Length: 559
Image 1 (tube, rainbow, N blue to C red):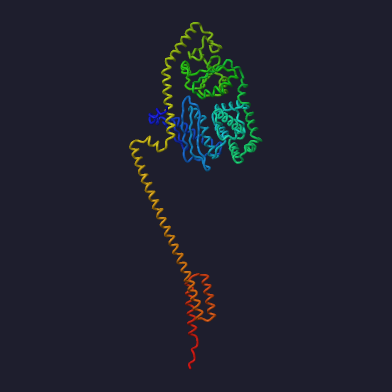
Image 2 (cartoon, rainbow, N blue to C red):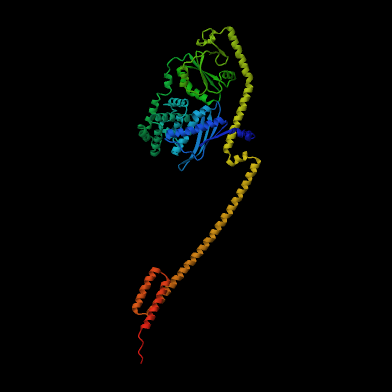
């Protein structure tokens, strides 16, 4: 199916990486130059800030920048993944993939992923998942942290909760997606409590103690005074006052006069999160929430009238009077706080969900103060209202085909860009260079390839000749060594022969006292010098002494 996308591969290659922004430690690729700069500057800011707050000092610049690949859109769910490798006490091979709305990227995703790199530089080894993800979640926006607290409190004491002793040992993510979400929530739950107790630097020392001892109970006792890890997690739960139950109990007044229009659409992950995590909490306050699905054609015009371009979005009403518009994912606490805040409004929106229009105050009596403005419509007004609804519905139907075609076109472009990114990720550097090269550049590259092959061939011949020369030299060295050994043997034989000759000559021509002295002298010389020249000298000396003796002997008497 995807083979049909190979034709426009080069056409969309430039679209996939339309902008690039470089900093000292990051290289950001994004479809928009402004967003690329925002992400790069935010990454550098949080790299320095995290290092100071958690480690006590900033890190030196990395030897190579970390690539950040950014995907962003008004309805794109937030998420990220940072990969790197450990070897011989070093960390390398950084790569970061992030996605989401621009606000989510800057507020939560970038600080979350950058903290992973700070921890990796500090410990230079894999970190238990609960601590790594819990600390990274700690630096996200407050609205995202509220969602994690809520989930952690909801699974407390249920079958979905991960036992604390299992949680602290986990080096990998659970296989099921629900388990991953629970790991994040419980990890953040515990990290937030520990950091709030003694600070970020103490938490780092706490992890160091664990790495030295291999025992979480010891680490908890040394740094936080808990005898074991179960007591620590129980304290974290108690410190949060039961999580979501606080929201349900802290309702200072009646919400019956309030309702919230909740704008959603198909394929919106934050919308699913809201319905799973936040709606059950709002239900306990008995506040009414009206869902408006913008995927339905008859609701599109309503979204345009209220200026709703992305989802989720919320409009808070009191007695039909618009109080506040919120165009982002929020927690139950934020929505209830919006109801508590005083607002002055002079407009009343009627016929919620179909987008008829706005009616102002009537005759000094604000229609918004009536619990149901629809009850005051006359028969003629109701007929006009129904006609308007029919007209708007027909208009929505007429626009459906063109809207669906636009959606299909956007989907195709998105699929093509996704395929291009996947294909580019699998290309080698040389393949990327060949794809983007002109014909003349390809010719030059081919010429370089030939030169490289020639150099490699010359290099092989040189190595072969060098090895042959070394072998020949080794043979010569061995032959020379044999000759030296032979000479030494001949020299030893000659020395023994000379020694015998000298001794015999002395005995023959010198008195016995001289013979003894010469033998002693020869032995000493032979011990010190071990050579033939000394023996020759002694021999000559003995001959001289013998000759002198003959000269000094008295001449025989003449007869």
